[in-house]
Image 1 (tube, rainbow, N blue to C red):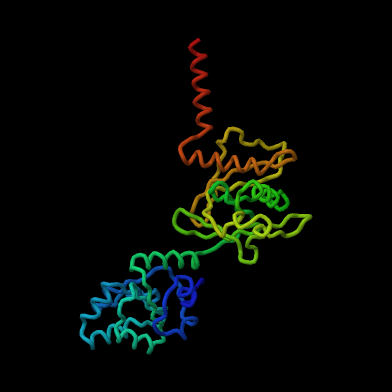
Image 2: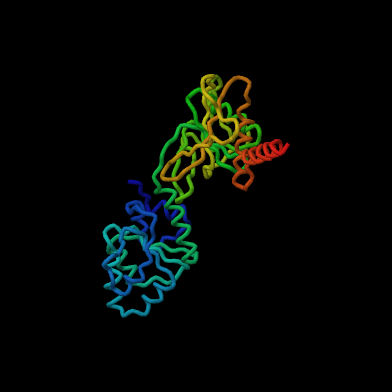
Length: 310
């Protein structure tokens, strides 16, 4: 099971440690869901999600300051579950003494942020979803082509990396070569990035490993991108019929997200970088409502009708 330490959360989200700093690396977050313990402040703990970050905003802190001291002590102590990763207070609001004491007794860190509650919740949720999402490693090359994330797949030796190098020279950006780490950002979006050990690196047979950022500059690489299109390269076969009208688009499923996939045959004399570049532009045109295949079919139908009248 994926997990994130509270220390990582503090470092990545620019949080301030109010108390419990020595426990940051021993407390772990296992879910991207965040709890706003409003009902718990009133004493209702039947469905208390103690494994979540407990985020206290203006409403919770204001209510806590109106409670009687003994009631506040009881509630704050009960909110400290065995698997509660941390308490987080927004807007640098004043932290009740009883919460501070309960956190120390149960070794639960208390964190603060200057951000408003809604923005803080959104920022932390995005970070945790990225870190905790299920990941899958795919063999291929991921490129940013005209702002579209294009995953280039195909058998080993078909020319994926060489094509990627040509695309980089044409001004497009590399995200990952050889292995692409993919995770689901939301119900409709897959994000791809390079494993840390392969970041910015490209392998060219006969040359070896090259550092793309060092050779072509910082503008030639990206850390990650949303995947919009899959282009599968395959060796040309005379016995196979290939799509010529653009109606052979397939679907590729991963993490219950469907991505469009096209197959492009490879043979000597075909400039794969230009073809993939054109495929990306054509895909973007389709998403904007222009379909060249449909236009051809409309033109053909008009021609048939015109000839039939004669």
